[in-house]
Image (cartoon, rainbow over all chains, first blue to last red; front, side, top):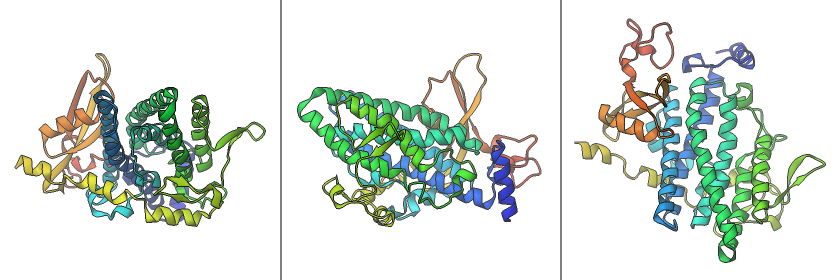
Length: 312
Length: 85
């Protein structure tokens, strides 16, 4: 299809047009939404094994049940996004089972081990909040009707995950002593991890169709600010230190560390002292994937075929 | 459209539900399942964000579009693309 068709569709979308079927998509639109949905689905899917391994450290049966409810939600969200892709002719079977682990499109944060209950609840407080920022924006702005409707359920449940994270962060912060120290250590590596998740700053961002086709409404930097505008006050109210502050003159949140910078996944530590690195170095690290990538992918694939063998 | 997953043919089911008495039944989503019984289970477990007053599933192949020739049900149009997804 021609550039004219692409421009016409963008024009219609700017006036509020909502697409209801894949047949209405131009090749450019189709490509952009496939990338967006693949990232969304892979992220939901990979959060499940990350949370599942961490849920073993739940302090009680009740709390473990809450953690498992969150995992079940994440799997449902992944399934919903893969199903939308299937309607566009993309094979869910291939996406889940046919790719190499390093070909999944989830953020680097979900390649990291969550080693204790504090890390799980900070993941709920930070990563799920990032999910709400990103998907809430998609929900408000997307020009694809089926996705807009699918996100009603997703947003509702992600809010529950966030509440779970916040309630537990508050509890650990109040506990004092070792619990609070552990919480601070989580914040130290997971805060910059989430900041990086939002991707290239706007001044470096190559032009993408996602805004033109109204697949989302906010830019990377706007989303990063949105995330900080709730995360920074939360952490400050809990007496936790975060490497960012509000600059009243500039009316925005400002990072107090070189961004982007290098990460040591073994030590779970950001190398602030080594200074700023290039975004191509960040992409290189993302492409190499993190320590849990293969294990997480293997974990979601493990029981393949089991259901059919039980039914036969 | 049905597809093989681990030796199991699955097809698409549309999920409809209403929250309360008096509310219209609305389309809330879809699931893939190898048969009607599992479709009921998957729908109930997947769309558990509300305490639904009523939920039902419909095989995608059973929805017959009336006025449109595109979208997920287009293949079921009498005389349309080869029917029955």
